[in-house]
Length: 459
Image (tube, rainbow, N blue to C red):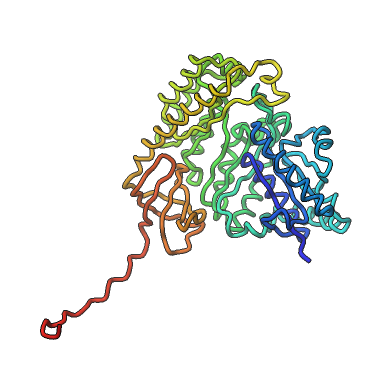
């Protein structure tokens, strides 16, 4: 009888990359994916603690699984990701005693497999040995249900973080910064491409610090050049960057390498210098403004995305408005928004008072949200009537959807199977968050058969 597993995933793309790796290892032991936790022999929760809402969601899911475990005591429940963290969590184990395995972020599958049968442990050890060779031989590293269907895949290149912004829990949960070897990353990308992946997203908490922990080693620009040369790969993206490490070498690599998309994720977090200093970001609003102009000097057409936290401790109305004003001035392509929530153990939680009321955080959130929509609406209109290249990812409600090089979402109708194809689409409608159009190479409908005129005398 086939053994099955089920994954529940929340949080960042790094979590999806981690989950994909563990799912692949389970499949090497003969497990197959099922969409229903109620039917699974193994249920794995991939969790996030960056915001309280994400953490609460994980705890709610665990409470639901407690009832399932009572009904099926032989099933295995595993929790991985930032709720567990690199140091483990004894309180978590006491709170959820029915959980069989707790795994650190970016771990391999050994802690999970060791709780399965001895036969599985032996098979796992054999599979790990095979997997090391597979990375060189470009063999399977995708779960069966994703092979041939996953068009864009996240690939971790830097684990952890050593920057330690005062609001961020990642250094505690994912550990210090560790860059993966170039050859290991390239081997993973080649394997993904061999299984149908067309685009990879290179991930790091501060991705432009790739290689900083390796003396005289390759940097992100060097890595981009290696990945750009992989045959069959069509697109490369990377996130998330930090303003202090966005070098000209990286920017010129983005400009000059044909597979690297003209999209830069570089958070400002706040537009007031005192707030930035309290966040321990290491730059000023003026320096961030200069960076944005510099990016546009090198790549005038680049799409620039940013992150904003509203309601950081001590943020006054005037300080918030300085954030609003610089966003209005710079007209960035996308703003990822979050309301500040104190994370236990961070500097801001220990030493600062969360003194901005929740209602005020929400008001500020919605003001920037509305600004973001207006900016995006105007920027999207430039594509109206233009023909754009779309990497087709999947169908949504009967329509094909994909993304442009600038990461704009596009919908279009077409009877052909275009998954994974690069399609030229002429845009005939734009909104703030997506566009729609028609594939310009779509076959014309067959002509209507000509109907001979019927003499009036016969009518």
